[in-house]
Length: 40
Image (cartoon, rainbow, N blue to C red; front, side, top):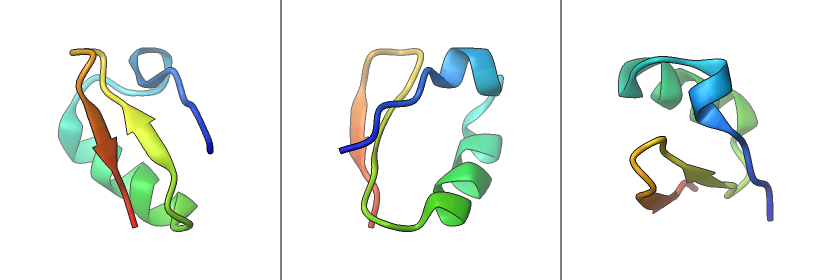
């Protein structure tokens, strides 16, 4: 699994979607809102 501190990388969920697409291998991304989303 991959954990990313998104609050240090981006400020909004739109940018998050772009990063998730670049990762593209089922990483779990943790939002600054502490909500966990499974991508992929």
